[in-house]
Image (cartoon, rainbow, N blue to C red; front, side, top):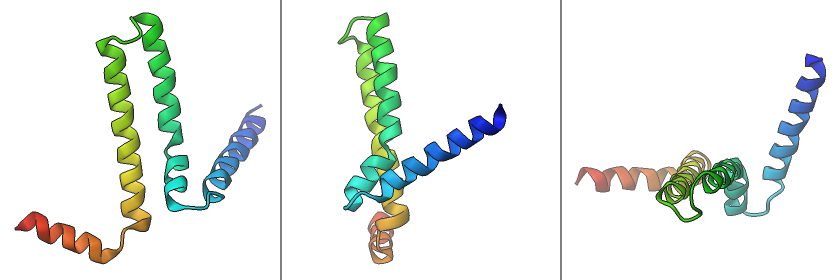
Length: 97
């Protein structure tokens, strides 16, 4: 039972990683890598719309936090894989001044 679940989960992870790396530009790769955050946010937002009014404060907060999560994910990926070390050094020098 667990072996079948493990195999299906592993195949899903490999498919997801392949889907990310098949993108042609870094922006597309970052969008695809952070897509599960958007998917989860949309799922929670739909549940919030069912529980409250569609344009309530709760739903707007869910959208806002989902957007912040996606931005944070993309920023972390950019810093880790695409930022040139000189860019990072100049950012820290500007913050110190």
